[in-house]
Length: 315
Image (spheres, rainbow, N blue to C red):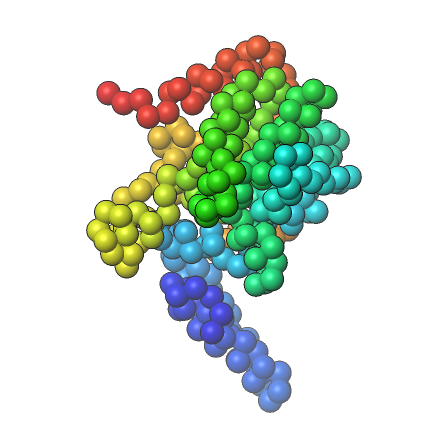
């Protein structure tokens, strides 16, 4: 049975409607009224389930294997994409995509994490978990964008930076820290959007922006729910409880003023209607970029710094 666990009632009803349609067609029996009742019931059920998603259910949607990734969005909402490779120090990290493209009529630098669609590609992309050379490649392209006065668009989708021995030997923490530091000073507009998973420093390493957006069913957190539950309760099975406690959904983060806007998704997630999802993201990115291009560079950098300094303030 396709679908996530909490979608089981929806999938069962969809299969029932499909069976009735086939039966009606094969036997030449008019079952339109019965089918219509079930379709209405299905629509109400979808609104009820998807309108009351828990944090853990949103995480499951954010991790859905059919969700759009960075390269998918580039192909669907941008043109003239030219990819850049390598950090000019060690090598090329395929977990981060970098290059230049055209968004509508605006030339932009585009960066983002990239996961794979199958086992081989996931291994090549390291499941979207970047190495230090990925973050250095990203900064190389961002500085090029600054030189040519091009806005930077960043799509975030990673469980976290790769914590392996090789990555640590090559300066993982330093690469992320230097990116965070340098992004605050870039004299060009930066728009970031979490399109799936926003995991820890792996996300923040390319996550400093004048506008920070999140897709409706994405999450952004200092740690994964599984990691949090393993540390706090020594029990990874408490991931659902950790997800609620971490306050990692788009709605939570908008309320805390950590992000600036939520980009709506089709009912049930991006994978339910990829064209609509891509269109929604394009409109929001264009709106954000056009707004930022009207701001003086000195004010842009100042506002970006102050925006992040306010995060975490409380009374």
